[in-house]
Each structure stands twice: as structure tokens, then as C-alpha cells.
Length: 68
Image (cartoon, rainbow, N blue to C red; front, side, top):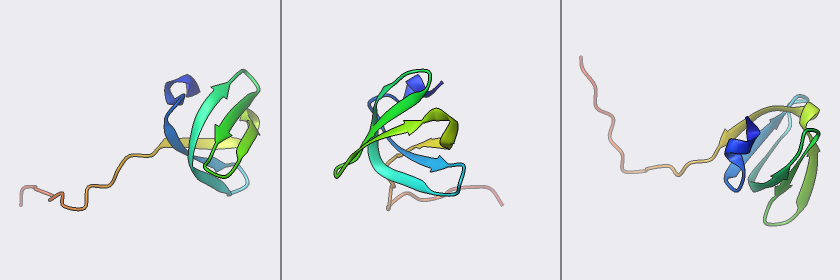
């Protein structure tokens, strides 16, 4: 399932509550993920990952429309 996020900017949340963001998943196998941020290259065991979130751009001028 993580293969969908290859070469995309993601945020990784870890089981221990930590997180890492502003980086890209560049490679993966059945045990590890390589995550490259502007400052470092991390090799992360898949067993330590809780969730992976795709980072999307915020739209500051977007309006919310709904029904009352």
C-alpha cells in the first residue's frame, strides 16, 4: 500500500508519537522505507510507522459552501 506514496511528499507519524515531514518516499521494500528530506536521508523500519499522510497544498482563498 505504501507504494502509492513513492516519489510524493508525505508526513510519517510513528508509533511512539513522533513524526517527520517535508520529505519524499524515494524507495521501499518489505522491511524498510527510505525517506529523503531537504536535510537528511532516513531509513525507517516499516514496523515503526503508524500512518503515512500525503501532503497537499493548502488553498488559502478556498471558500466553504454548504447548506443550512
